Length: 490
Image (cartoon, rainbow, N blue to C red; front, side, top):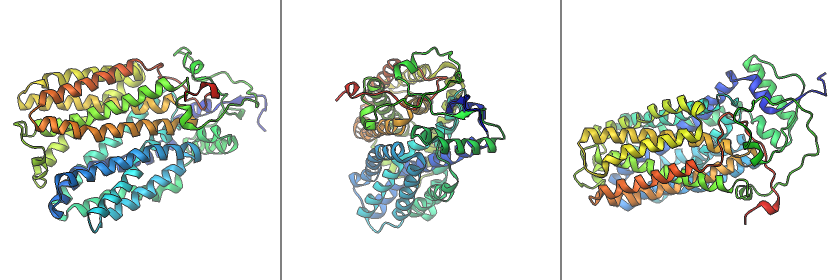
């Protein structure tokens, strides 16, 4: 019988249990989810041109195959985030896996263009829930090394990108785009098969008042990790004011003193969407929107410039000429090599994110990205151009990696998936707009204007990072926030 006078919080429990076998299994499942998403996005680079050739599509019809996926992701990001915060992380992940798997497999046997667009939109809607994997994994990780482990989690995206490029290189020339779609859906199918083994996060259960269920999950985690829970009774963390939570010194010990928590702590529970616009969170919410939009816009812009300027296309030829050589091995080599740029960025992020902090890491990497792009306002030698773009992509992708750590950390559990989902959706808008703006500039021999546009966006993102109200390095995750109706900005 536990001593009723001794209690411990969820953060104390997770820190005591440590990172072990259970978190490794959670990382593997969440990582598989990100591999699945990155493969479905990457295959668009190869499927569009092949479908255009086979079905005699126009360039606009070809581009719609990509646009509908991003449109589906735009809606799905918010929808799955809301489902996650309302019904649980695992239920949201199940829905994501079901929708993505079914739509992906069916799109491989699409009888015509309209069916392909409809099914790829559904794939995009499913992929919109990819951010739930990061929130789910985050809530199992102890505070001290959370940043490093989240960077490791982000490597799965790059692994999926490289793997999809290699798969396309093997499959497309001999079997065609339908087989590429079918084989690329296998990770999604694996997620469905393995779903029965994944647990709900104790943090979500505590946030919903299901403390006994959370305790059961923690006992299973401790058993798998061959450790023990702290002595005493698990209690939900007290509701804390966001300003108070983040005004504490960064040196505050993550293992707080064990205290007797009163049971009459109550908070209002307005809509998740409204909480994001409360006086406590509105500044963070809007800055995150700018960060996600700008970084996604810049990232896809750098990818576009890489394809155009470092592959022998720099003499103002149409970007569509690249798609007409889909069977040319040089295309696969180019995409494969540039995808590797993300791995050094991930390594850099892993080294500095828990030492220098999230804000400083993002700011310094945006600055380096800005510096590397600057020489490209005028034409450079091909080797120098490729090197500069390689480095710019490295730092841009690394910034987004840290942003994907910062965003779920900065929101309380009650609105974490919703907040990250909306920010992700805003980022998708940047991904949709970038080709419309940048393709016209680059293909019209306006390289300087295109680069200056990306430089401007990168600079804005860097400024947004500096204005974030607080650093999350070494902070415990918060579960709720006091929000009264008077604090909501309508």
